[in-house]
Amino acid sequence: MSDPLISDRALWAGCAVTVAALLRDIAAREIFPRWQSLHVDHKSDGSLLSDADTAVQQALAQALPGIYPAPLLGEESQVNEQAALWREANRAQTPLWIADPIDGTSNFVAGLPWYAISVALMHQGKTVVGVTYAPALDGLWHATLDGGAFFNNQRLTLATAVRPLKSCLIGVDMTLLPQTLRQTIANISPSGLTQSADQTSPWRGWRSLGASTLEWCALASGQIQAYVHGGQMPWDAAAGRLILAEAGGFSAALTNTTMADRPLPTAYAAAAPSVWPQWQAWLDEQRMYNHSSY
Image (cartoon, rainbow, N blue to C red):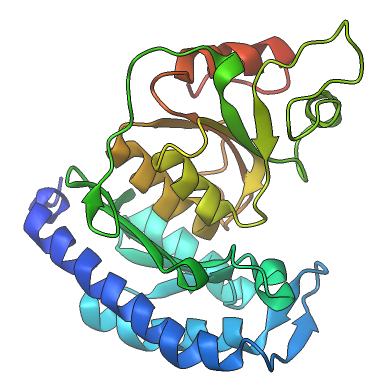
């Protein structure tokens, strides 16, 4: 039986505004004071973990249940805790906060501005609130289910007029892409130059920001027009997919991990409505994925 709260736009809009203010406050308290004096460790997978990541997650865990009563599944939670929360949310369709306390930690540690705090609220298996804040850029994206997407409170609406894929800038993270697809993209420079005069680029160029939450937002804002990522965890994609969808864009999971008993990486393709069919067709030509979920 569907919960009437799922369509309560005013409730979710209020949550989004409150979360947005919270993220700005947490950045001011926990991120900026640490930026020049970070303590950095390595996680088991080799990725970086700063004391700011831990502090931000603790602040989110304390504050988010007061905005809406649901537990927090965060990137820095213990693996067994992540699995238990994921199973319960899938089994009972219970509400769940999902957060990446600092996405783009390597950028953050290096002093680069492309990092973000990203928070989503899941209700009955749907993302109803998504907020992503880039502190160094003072850029804030938020969206609610059926309530639209916004950048710094300005409505985002992607153009629908068809444009050639060749005119587009695409976003790519090649880490977990299949080897053949990764090599195809790598043979084309980020500026769209190819290795020989006989080869033409299918797009104008490509970019990798090192922060997938911001790549979703760049797509929703029209700064890039298409996107492919070989494997994102729920906290990487939940807010961004909602922001993109509410801006009028499209995305599809290329691997099905939604019913797994723990969070697993999922490959995604996404694009603005102006190039979505062409992007699907190009990826299909690569025959790297099962596209039945399109």
